[in-house]
Length: 431
Length: 80
Image (cartoon, rainbow over all chains, first blue to last red; front, side):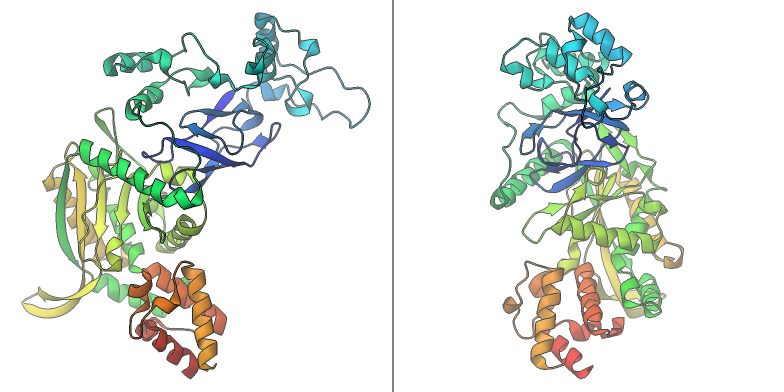
């Protein structure tokens, strides 16, 4: 049995609204499959599930807004109960076969004093599920229809780490809603409780016309947190783009119009490769310590035409070819602006790149997206007077900036990082 | 392609690329990129849209001619 919870789709998300369920009880799901559409203040997203099994029960209705970590559905995982829940579905007419019950559920029923024979199963093929037993075991009244998390509990189960952290941070465990196994309170619940101030009640479902104001608030809250917590330092350097621009022109000349690349793709790839040399730019700050990330998921700041900005990730940019990256970028920008993003894109960028400068400015000093530790900004590509080898010439140039977290790195390493991006761009054929 | 057809095509392709963009707001001589906030990805999508509608293989070196509405109209009408 697993719990499918409202994921955190970015550090600025406190709650989400189930816009649509794409599965129903009894449906088989696979790890990575998309099971629901969730709306947040910033966007609409397809939510992936991280377990394989059978959907047992949906606990949150469409249209309901719930905090991050809330259990949305119970999932019977493959290895456990689903194995016994495999008989063919009952015939459409005729007497129903006796309910199929897994050993786990039978034990739970015995413990709870529930008579299995009187239960009608809601699981696959009329199987009596754990949730059915739990419902039957609850006191009568309207509570029976409410999801488990909504019921008062004397003392929630909690992990040892959560208890230690709660003591350190002065959090009352009994006031928390657990998102761990069986509703137990885990580390992230405690952290969440500290982040969510008591006066910041979860927002109600957002009407489209309120979206802009809500997004402004969400961005404001996240950026305020960033400026409050992260000691930023800023570096800037000008990069000569003659080599990559010439390479790009030559490459695109040979390609059909639909296969052409843009400079942004080279800049993204160079950034992703540069973190190999300076890994302290790529990863997350959590609990006062930095964890660098093996994978390079580059968040791409996309400005929305209706106002606001969103920075979903392209995964494993360091391993993509330029063509794959171009396809990925096109798809991501399109979906960020008009369509729907996926949970994994919102929740796990390890470093962010902003290309804001394309729309005018020469230099952009970005604000880091917590819990990331670095943000790279590229300004507009402009022709500048550039001296090289004792000659003055006109070269296409870009100003690259780095905003980085001083708790993790120093200016010296930051400078090395920008120099590495520069070096990589000078050999565009190898990107 | 007539002037009006070209204008109509530009309008519909721009609408696909940037639904919020209003072509009427673009002044004569103003570039589309600046007037409508098009980044290089948007502009590429715009050019791809023109290509798909007309079959023209628009080389990259012609991009500057497409940066204004008038430029686009001239380009499209003179190309056939």
